[in-house]
Image (cartoon, rainbow, N blue to C red; front, top):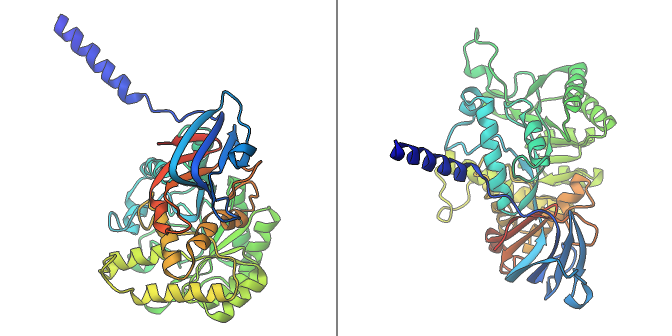
Length: 431
């Protein structure tokens, strides 16, 4: 009996150990001492320090100019660069790589509660990789679960980046997936990866529904693979797109448009969308049109690489770029030449969460300098999100900070080596 009782006590003790999470350090006053500070507005400053007080940055500058209280916690970051928390503003936390599970199977076979639990795990991996803000552009068949994920992060129930969510993307009837052409004609009521609409009235209703549910952004598919042979073709008319944008803007919400064809990009731009995602077949003319209308661009270069790996047997580090990768690189060059605002958005979910840094590395490979890529993932993304309190290290900004080994403004790969993550003044990772 004594042995059995001891075993029960031991089992209970083990359960207690397993169930108690390692809580992040609470927000307080923290003095960070890295080797250098990059503010997202100036060259790196060697020897500078950053003082945070609760959820905000209190001071940034040389040690003699920053007066920390005696009870401030001090975090030493030798050899590291401190920079604003990174952002990826084209993400899909409810997806995981297609070489693990094809997209159709994720939508049709994985239950929404399971996908939500997975999304929570993937959100934590993203945060610990130094990405403190995401714009999640559609749950891909997981309904409105991103609203609950956002709430769980905001209330501290789980760890994850600050989320801006789009709930269900809006697609033209019959154009998205799981595609009707792949099913028997008498099959009905299958889950859809987005919300279907046709005509101005339905488009307006869909926007109002998503806004009413709590979406931060409205996402629309201006084109998709619904043409003959699965070719990319525009979906909504300009009239439908204008009605969508006007309704979204009337509610105070910006609009992101999936568009890979020049015509889809043209229609979306003229309709007044705020960002265009992908843009692989964009022409110099359409990028100049985007620049003239102030439409920002998210290139999603890593997604193209991931598709090449899954479907074209491309091997990273060995093979020459595929035709699609070359086209995506050319689109980025056109956008840069036209002076389009270019942010960092990767389509992560197509590839593994927590490796979002790959997009910055592709931006550099395809023509940006390391500083331009870092700016895209900080100050520029904050500008696109209309959040002046994010994306820079300055007094008064939110204390979203990441420290990486080495100097990422000189060697872009340094962003892979994260040693500290702080969001809203709370430390989630430290040396």
